[in-house]
Image 1 (tube, rainbow, N blue to C red):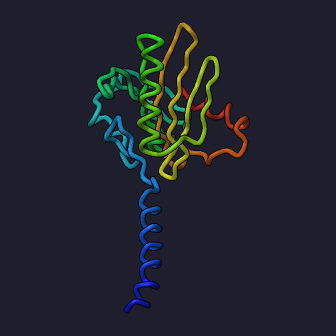
Image 2 (cartoon, rainbow, N blue to C red; image 1 turned 60 degrees about the vertical axis):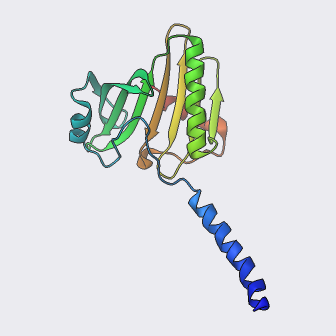
Image 3 (spheres, rainbow, N blue to C red; image 1 turned 90 degrees about the vertical axis):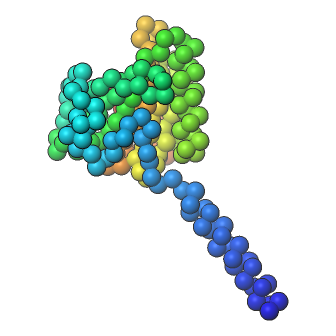
Length: 185
């Protein structure tokens, strides 16, 4: 009996550690500012949000629909971006801060929460006029970006469908342009 316990105990611990490692992987991405999922249709969006305040062409060759949306007590707007097959490809909540301090506080809070949910981001940039962080996840990339020109300031918290998400870049500088093309598109 002692021999089998000596053999089984390390195997059991190894199995337990393996299972704990697997359970901590965050494959499922859940957007915190809407109940809409990637399987949702335009009709589902309209049933939840009503009539959009505006619409315009999306970067996915479809239409972007914009609605007023409060998230965590802050008034903003949500953009649902569809492709030319009416499949939802991106959801973004946009917030216009009331001050530079508000901008920094909201940005840091969103980054902190997202880091708590998904771990450290795979990319961050802090430029003079824009900064952002990206989480490269199997369930779709998450991007939090800030644009501040001194006149206009905004924070965008964006979730991308896995089909339009990119892999973590090997070279940070190659990805700067594509990251900031996605912010505010």
